[in-house]
Image (cartoon, rainbow, N blue to C red; front, side, top):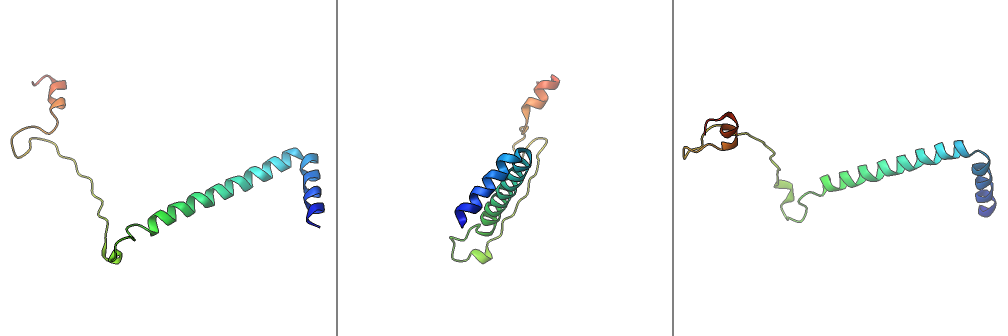
Length: 87
């Protein structure tokens, strides 16, 4: 029974090539999207699960920029002054 269904599917795909190509490319795209989404969710949901107190771990993400001289009086970005001819 399965053999005849597969044989019929190949006949239809051979007869209507453009329809089969659109159908298979859509199916492939859907499977790839599901796999990528599943891998992303798995990586986000299993973050730091090796620690025994993983429920108390928080990830703090903060980006800051520093412009101007630091506490020792030196500039953090001397290439900026060099480009302006101050050195």
